[in-house]
Image (tube, rainbow, N blue to C red):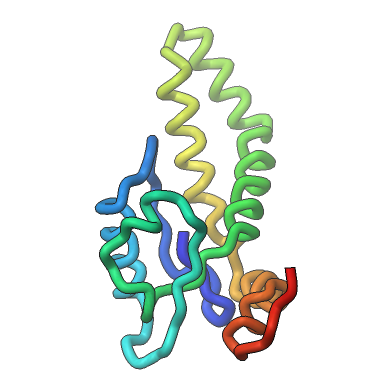
Length: 143
């Protein structure tokens, strides 16, 4: 997921399983196409191997924020605990449908239903409360 403190959710994709450098590069290209090409934007990502090995330049991409992922996960948990989803799972059990793939589909649908939890207002709050603005201003950060 790529988010911005000014626009909120910029772009997201669903990926079941691991991610490699090529998938990450593809994601960055897709996210970049969602942004104003004249806007100066920074990419901030963690040290996972797919991020370290990415060939796509970091400039002109979007902020990634752990808080956005946590907010989406929380919304998904509430969503899938609702009686209608639980009834759907119970019906699948009753019919003998393999639950592994079925649960995966339920999670993916819940994710799509809840992307609206990543708002520009929340992204701006997360951004302001991080050390990122101070780094971009060239301030010294201890610890």
